[in-house]
Image (cartoon, rainbow, N blue to C red; front, side):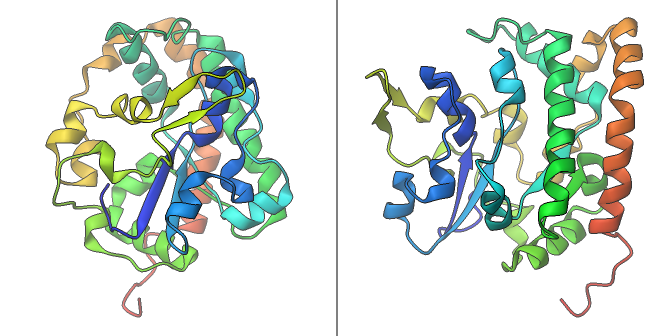
Length: 259
């Protein structure tokens, strides 16, 4: 979120390989071949990847090409309340997003949520730098948790990680070249990826918690009783385990006076 001119964020770089018709994840961020590394050498990169939405390939692809990628990237897995997450899928569909056919497929949602959990479980034994977090735990004390995350990643914490001076801007993200050739010869404009995530509440907010702690989101009404019961039975236990681990990795009572 425009934290620093020396910090760049990739949004869904691996999944874009699947969306571009190559039918396989784009792992160039792990082997250093992504063009952004050449343009911004010796700088910090954050990679945000989201499983889902419209096709099963997007919900269950492998996030890491090998164990070295897990060790190298020090991944942080994030889960949100499953009912709230499902409501966001339905909100996107209700908003009439073009090309999002199937986004309201509950089975696909369950696959994506379960695969996120399973990937963490499989990655956890590989490195002690693999951690997880729930959005709800983060929102209890955003500043404190962000400080703990930065300490784990060996990067300096700054206030503008949770309070920023500019509205959400596509130019605050690094997406390498604006266009690049794909295997089928088409051109892909990465700016479209970032335009998709410029939600109004993010654009207008100047703080992380003002966006994420919005309690007036109307899409909760889109979740049916049957969907809620199914999600609670199948996915709630996964979220609860993440919640317990969140306190282990990022304890809220830890003193940061020495930070």
